[in-house]
Length: 151
Image 1: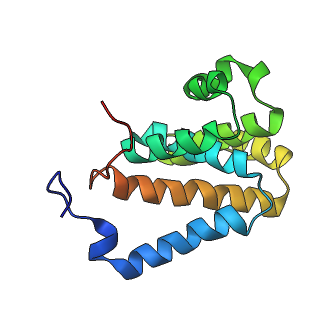
Image 2 (image 1 turned 120 degrees about the horizontal axis):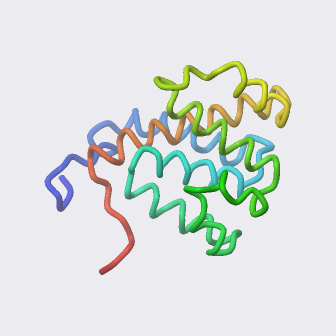
Image 3 (image 1 turned 120 degrees about the vertical axis):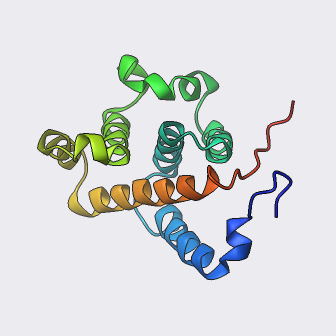
């Protein structure tokens, strides 16, 4: 068990962890999506879901390729459209739509906008990216995975 007395899910269910990390591996190495876009989507999905571990991790990943000023504004990306390219904005909008699917029902309008920005394979890969991060968030937050940030 971890310091916070919650299970370390990957140790308890190593086969499940292997399967989930296999999806992560596909997303990060087996798609044509830009690495920066993947980490941007990972971060935004994690912000929506409130997973501290994933927010910490993907902020650090994104800061390797994106200036702090842009990363800080990811939660309000729609208010600063000049900071993010059209494709990134489309990915962020679709990430929010899919992550909040119980509220949005993946509307026809949102699907049309995402389809206009991404070809069929990239749209499926983007949606797998979103789904994978949602799965990781649903393990990271309940089991309180640690963050690297220090007081």
